[in-house]
Amino acid sequence: MKLFALNQQAKHEQHTQMLDAFAARSQSIQDAREQSNKESPMAALNRRVIIFVILGLVIFTQVAPVLLDVPTVVPTVQKGISFLGFDITSDKVYYVTLVCLINIVVVFKCDSMLFVLLLVANFYIFILF
Image 1: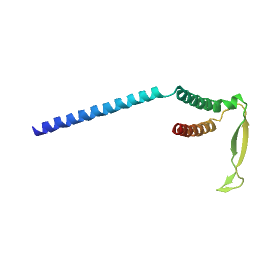
Image 2 (image 1 turned 60 degrees about the horizontal axis):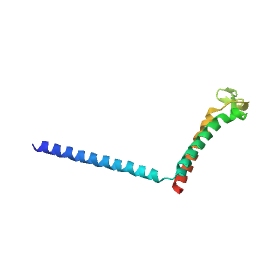
Image 3 (image 1 turned 120 degrees about the horizontal axis):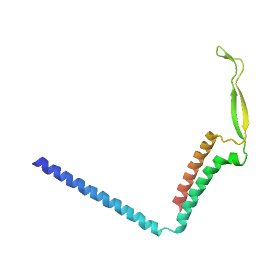
Image 4 (image 1 turned 180 degrees about the horizontal axis):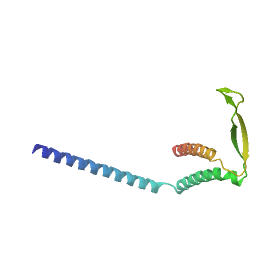
């Protein structure tokens, strides 16, 4: 009987904790709604402008080589001659210029760097304002 009573008491405490967590979450949602009502319309516009600028920069870095005829330079390695592990001639690097072509590796490196930079900038903007 004692085990049954302990089990019922544990279930009651768990149910009480679940109701407390639900009430806290509901209060948090209500506070966020009240805060959004107090927010100025310019803050929402500011967020939209930041998002559109980020999207525009990401798209621009991907289509700029094609639209602006920016040449893409790709390194090409010509292997040298090696005999029994001894280099007779060294490797030579030639740079080939390609027109109207997007180097995806460079674009994604640039976009990821741009994304991190903009995230840091947004963090500081929201902290200051």
